[in-house]
Image (cartoon, rainbow, N blue to C red; front, side, top):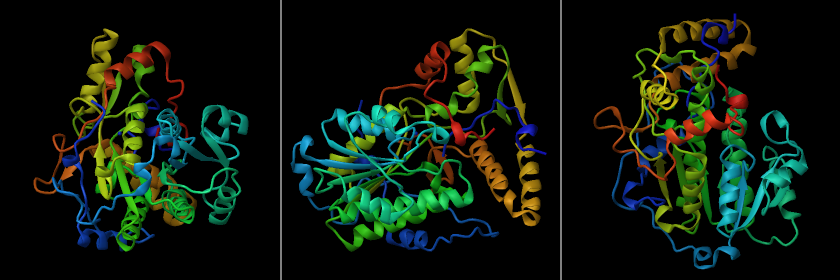
Length: 413
């Protein structure tokens, strides 16, 4: 029995997010929370998980924020290393950094894109304007050697890491979200980088999944690195849902089928952000000292939308009478229970159970800032950035389809 056979095949869930954000919307953890994060284990626990809420603050980080010399240079003299450069967000980040005039080193695999469909030539065309370093971020020695062999590159000023597990599987999460990301930090430091921008995820506030634990472990080590060396700074960017993860039902609704949602469609909400707006915010973090040594949750413009409201918006754009199919959330609990039981007998099914937990998480948890005072998600405390709206995205997909927005291995159903 497959998970997908029990749920509508068309259903997709959000991915585990004016052009400036006031410094007052930044977040930073206390030292006690940092120590808690450092204790995260690689193994899953059967006990009830602890949540790691982050508190809004109008003050700067408790850590001294040094004036990093590269920010005094003109953009064309600032060299930025980008890993995860061919991913959904990474490729747009490269384009934005190039547009701003930076010297960009983009690290890519020999075969990149969804399931390795893109060749070296495809990658070179996609990352035009950047120096492409073909390497393996999962091998620290190879990455260091390949970066050292680049001609005309003697120093890296800042690094942007857009790496993310391709499917959220248990081993892949630790291999990419932790180990490969740590390899990026090591290589960046070896080449003189003194600022590190990490693309994380807002859902790490409630770490119930393996990729969230992996991301949190690296976040803690990144902050510890900065505490040990005040000349080194970081920006941790935690975006909400991406547009592409909300577009999977456009075509089926366009064809007259119902919009599928869990429960009453009000179990969760998000402030989705376009890849262009998120890339712009990430690029801001390179040169904006006000964003240093801070955790920065970020969403798109407008109000937070529930799945019900997303569906209503889609029907409105199409000019169709709303038609919804409500799926009980309990069906996911049932399926997850089956896979967890089978995984004890057949360890190869561990990832199947984890995929079920990922689907359950995104079906019920909001991609918004968690308010520890109220014990609820807060749309008001989730900063907005950019200009692209979900309505515009839906209208574009209706006209042009989902080309360039494929979910690939991140598809849940």
